[in-house]
Amino acid sequence: MLLAAALLLLTAPARAEQDRTLTVVTWGGTYEQSQRAAYFEPFEALTGVEVETVRYDGSLQALRDHLADGETRWDVIDLIRADAVRACDAGLLEKIDPAILEPAPDGTPARADFIEVAIRPCSITQLVFSTVIAYDNRAFPGEKPRRVEDFFNTERFPGKRALRKAPVALFEWALMAYGVPRQQLYELLSTQRGFDLALAKLEEIRDELVWWQGGQEPVDLLKQGKVAMASGYNGRFFHARAVEGAPISVIWDGQLLDYNAWAIPKGADDGDLARRFIGFATRTARLADQANRISYGPARKSAQRRVGLHVTAGVPMRPYLPTAERHMETAIPRDHTWYAQTVDLRQRRFRQWLSDDAGDTEGEAGREPAGKPAGD
Image (cartoon, rainbow, N blue to C red; front, side, top):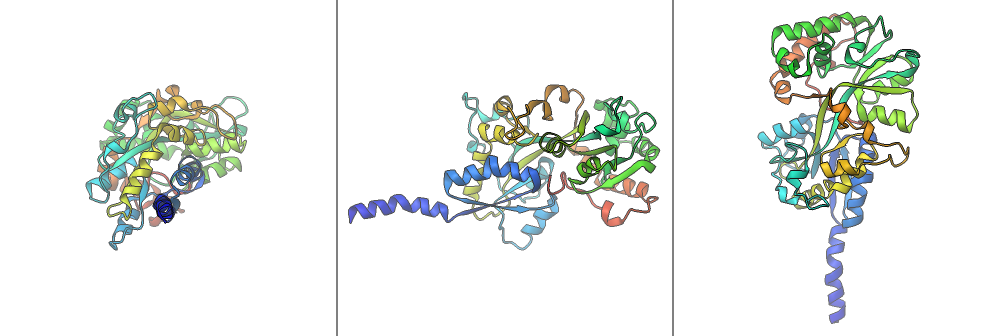
């Protein structure tokens, strides 16, 4: 009887873990697939906890709507870092004690190992992604486009261009096409003249523009030969080229850097389990594992050093990461303060400019977009 009682005590915690479910809100697509392999399945194997995912559109409004009825069914949410900061300020997220973060394998404390400002009161930055310009290799058998200004040069590099139908990255690239230094973009865009110049540059290629809204659309447009160049997410373009063999190349000049962060919705049913997952998912080995599956840069320096070959394509991953040294030389760190302060202005100016386009509707361009559409 004593032996049976002891065995019952030993197995009870395991059974309790197996009865628990962790609900993670994320983006879907190849991105979620990489998370499933790098984080969710290993966490399930370690703890016996089932990880269920919910796909969302990446907007802060989706979190607000979920919390509105007072019943929080989400445990962990993957947010654009700027949205995580805003959500924390609005009281929509739980606090996260940095003590849950493990040190690097060599003993380096987490705070010293994570990239700058990755550790926030309510969120932990996990990766770096970027919005880039890519082109169809078949469209340019001779000279290849290499810089942002080539996107706007339809005489030298003819063909349709695809842009996301949202006021994100467009203004920065338009000013770069004039030769404005990266360090001065947001200063100039804080003036009326900056907006006017950017829209005038976009006007030069208006007749060649095709608009997209879903993350897979620019990849498909390039693969189908419907456009010669397109904006999009570096992870999508990498997957198309390295895994699917699509004739697509990326122009790293002017990549717009952004960040994803783990957070816990306010009132989450299992906050302790959520913190345990975030501590696990931000380990050096876990972050490096995801970067070997999709070309997003890990938020830990120790993980960046461990990135190797893609798990199926076998190509070296470091040259495809936004954080590669040569890519960072011409990168644009997204100024989230400017984006937050110009929400209404950007929407209004963009809608006004689109008003002459017969295909525009208020619903398509009339709201602040999420950082990445679902499915990236």
